[in-house]
Length: 163
Image (cartoon, rainbow, N blue to C red; front, side, top):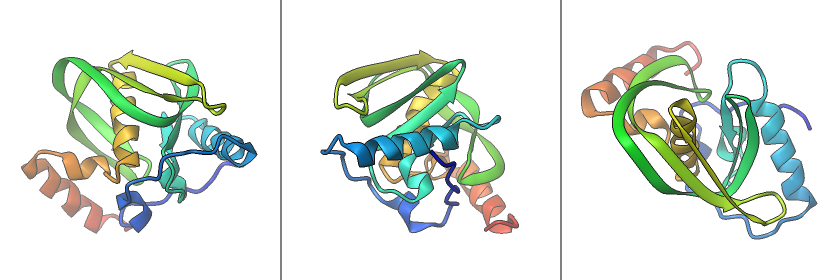
């Protein structure tokens, strides 16, 4: 299970709505392993499939002592208050902006075997669930920032040495 390179903002795969997974086979298991290996290094929280160039509805996480993945996730519940939380993204390296996120979130989906699962959390974990599901819908978080912050973020991206 190799760690894969991360696609950066501007790559078309990050703007593509991902295809749902319908086959739960060895190829899917290998992809989940690669996502897990890519999410595991220090300083990372999670990785969605399009971030490694694969347009499939899967993400893996390694956050707050919790390790796992969700296939075909759907945010089914949010709660608490909508709060600005500093947010970053491996596809937008080195840049952080306050992003409105719900304090609580739950997703349902499947595991690598096709079994139904529900993953939920609060705080940073809830932020991650919302962020990764956005990736699978073809959205990088900077595109959802409030108008003035979005302008600031896009300006910073254009000036970044990696863009």
